[in-house]
Amino acid sequence: MSAIETWGEMVRLEHAQSDRMRGVRPADHWTQCAPQFKADPYRSGDTLVEALRAHLRPADTLLDVGAGGGRLALPLALACQSVTAVEPSPSMCAVLRETAHEYGIANVSIVAAGWPEAAVAPADVTLCSHVVYVVEHIAPFVRKLDSHARRLALAVLFQSPPQSQIYALWEQVHGEKRHPLPSLPEFLPVLDELGIQPEVTELDAPPPRGFDSIAEARESIASRLYVTPGTAAMGRLERALDDSLHESDGVWQVEGTQPLRPCIVAWQTAGR
Ligand SMILES: C[S@@+](CC[C@H](N)C(=O)[O-])C[C@H]1O[C@@H](n2cnc3c(N)ncnc32)[C@H](O)[C@@H]1O
Image (cartoon, rainbow, N blue to C red):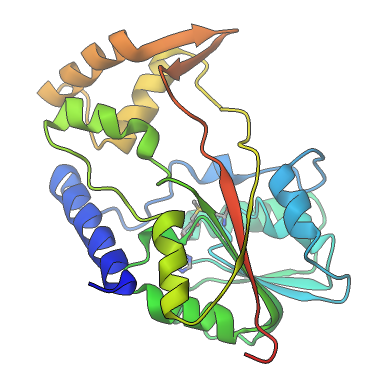
């Protein structure tokens, strides 16, 4: 199997397993957690924002594909001419719109559509942060990130799948191994098959967020494992969490959780 086929197969298997455990797919997957993607655009000390900003020039236009609530689009808009945020989730678009309004950032426009189907003009730089893990047809997605960037394309991915920290709990609760989503190790061979040779920069992991209480941890993890209250699966999850949740300085975490390190995958597109 080629790297592109392997990628598609991993996404299909993970999605099929999720659908089987969850039942009906929600129309907007992000409704509950979209507010978590709101962040102060003027914050300092965010390593990812600083590393991305270093790639931008003041006159650049930026296309942020899967911009979410604007965690990156808004601070980067302060460092370039304008940002076009392509985002299919209505709840994420709402957070982005409200945050831009709250902070008076007027050089961000939103295209409420998915990639690669969104009809948008090319930009100097394209950015796609923490999106590709769930993209089954990765080749047309990346080709359009490449063809719509006049100078530079940037992808941000973790070295492991975003939910990998709770894959062990998945197995304890559902009695089967979680099919992993693809992440950086599968992405680089995909780029290679597409004739793209990127530079990869590994960043420090942000401090783990953790949970304020056992109840919050239980609710958040249950939702990510598609477990509902009052079920046998919830009983198994509660027992597993009794063993694995621990508290330090008022923050609860699953034991042995290693913070995920983001990587910036960058390639020049001019002349390609
Ligand atoms: C984990 S969030 C990341 C948001 C933001 N890029 C960040 O790093 O904070 C993933 C986002 O990708 C969006 N997304 C998923 N599939 C997409 C697609 N095919 N085209 C564009 N965006 C997509 C989701 O709606 C969601 O807002």
